[in-house]
Amino acid sequence: MVTSTVFDKARFELKTIMPLYLRLQHTIREAVSTGILHEMDPLPGEREMAEMLGISRVTVRKALADLVSEGVLVQRRGSGTFVATQRGRIEQPLSRLTSFTQDMQLRGLKAESQWLERSIALPTPQEAMVLGLSPGTEVCRLHRLRRADGVPMAIELAVVPRQFLPDPQIVGASLYAALDELGARPVRALQRLHAISLPDYEAGLLQMPVGSATLFIERVSYLPDGRTVEFTQSHYRGDTYDFVAELYVAPASQAPTHKESGPQRGRGE
Ligand code: 16G
Image 1 (tube, protein in one colour):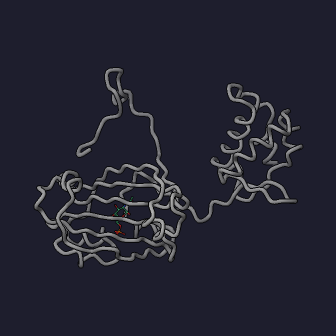
Image 2: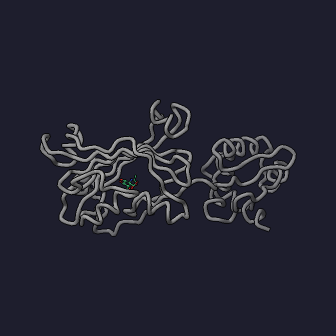
Image 3: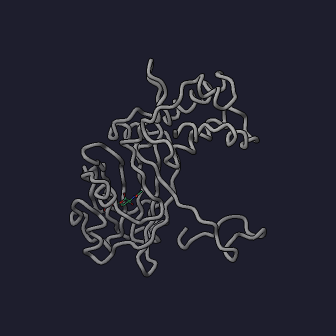
């Protein structure tokens, strides 16, 4: 039975460096992330789990309570504890340069946009710096609320130099499709994301409480010749998006040496 594999006392005792409740949380998280436990799989009862692992029921209760508040597990009164369903969240690989429209299509969802602004303007000082423009050079400002199957997912403000996008009205459903037509689709991008509390205006558009957790993402995209074609600042709903990164061990020749202070920085950073 799956649960006897997951809650195996001998394996559990190997994780000796962690406190017991953290060991149990780690065991459950690992089983969920590796697919040993699936959505809605039932977990053994508190007493049974405590006996299987040789720990107290108080420890089991503490470990489970934290995982319930994190959304890994759900508890149903009278019927026990289950692996939570992750339906509705979108897993977005961090290493693929795709557009919102493509990302949604890949998941069988219909991407839609509501225009908040579509204009020609002068760049802000920050935009001019990031895009490498002199302050008097015009840009297209494309501010959109992005929806998937009618559900608000993100707010994006894309700024593209007019040199690459002469008229913002050219953009229909997809900015990248329009840039593709113009021979200016980006092939490389740098992206940076951090968590913020959702401000007022954005909260209203995303239909989320003010102050809820949001991912603020900045993307700077480049053409094959290295010119900067896009600077986009977005607010993504923290409750619907998981950004997933695949990590590799760097070959010895690329590993940072003691003299280097951090990871190598890419062009344009
Ligand atoms: C993605 C990009 C955004 C780009 C947009 C184009 C992130 C964080 N952002 O949402 O930079 O402008 O796709 O989408 O991934 P579109 O072609 O559907 O308009």
